[in-house]
Image (cartoon, rainbow, N blue to C red; front, side, top):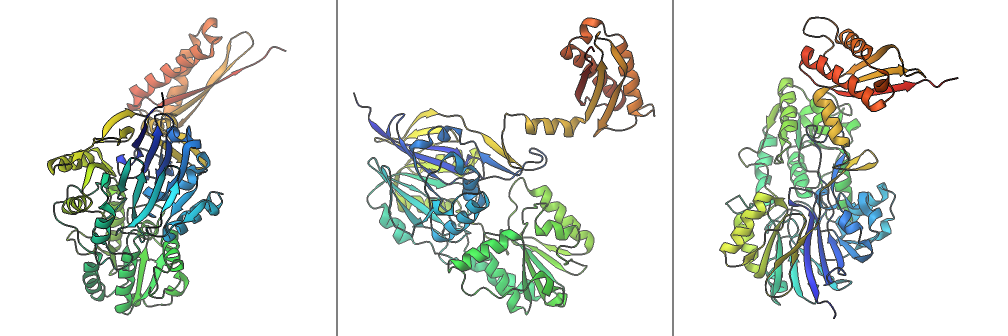
Length: 557
């Protein structure tokens, strides 16, 4: 008997966390569905929990194992948490990638950087239907903080799903397309089985504000400054870059863009015709010859990233430019939770220089790119879906949004990462679960979160590290004293003696007690060394370090 076809939704990233968005839709018999993937993003590490890691990716193993059933990858917009992982993981999939022109431009650049053919990225215009497997997918324009953002209209034999992507209801966004409620109502007329919807700002009770309200306040701020002005925002927020640059130009200042990501985004926006009247900019080299009161820098690093322009300026010179007492630094951005420490460090560094730091504490210089609770309710009313599935948010966001949908008379489905939701029939049901998680991009290597690499780094960072080398002859007798090296530990014990000397003495005594059977067994000998080192360190400095034992055995002649 033929298995019935079903329509499923599955988040592999982005549902239960902020970032790493990756959503799968499937249609067909259970176990034989054809798939499309919506977005494949990244999250950024921090030194506290992921030291040394470059970026964090969703674990896509489940889909990679069924890559022959993946018919297409659709990118909703050009933010890193939606497009940043595509090129890094493309070798697992080799499926066609679809995106609107600006997003496609950014995606192609990333593909080239990772050695993939940019021809795998296909440009799609708004509302142009794309047929892939059992699906017909169209890009539905929506306003956000990056140009050409779009929701997706996903049609299958089981009905229509609308996937919002990230969005706000801005009808005067400065750059990019305004929210068109009539268009959204039109595409919803045939009936919508499920609305899969951004949940980031579900806890904000007032309606969102337009990007257009910021211009006058930013202009007023810049005109009032007597020294150099520096402003930072998200590099992808093209509208904000234009607002800042326009304000600087109107104040009679020359504009400098600092940061590779910022230059890349503005270049792409100009290439695609999105930015047609951006103020002219000068190079950092030319800026050195401009009086600082006539200069405005727009720089990367609004989230405290150590290698970005903001952080480097806060530590001294960057490309020959530096801030001085009387200058002003504006954060035209919101600090993403988890980045507070890095941002605060930059602010304090500037404060020590005598630079005035201006933030958006009063809501004058930044508006969110995400829909607030009243906006979520408004668009849900326009679409009028049977089912609401919150996505892109921490678990508390998803749960609250799901309850909001239920309170408004719809079926709200709480579906964090790994939850398979069957959208067939008259009601959505949870049909199973798959394993999800994280993969770390560590240099050029992909490292699983359970591989122990990051765990070992954290242990060494917290506890320090001791290396001990011992030699054993052909008769299993220990030769000479052990050699010891310490890293990340105090060099002096509580009694004032060098820790290295204390360890060597303690090991000499411990190894003198070792019998032939223990000396012949590497594991047993290592255990003796580890216990002696950790006990001595605990007594002397209150630490139990990680211990590596190097055993050299001499062969008989």
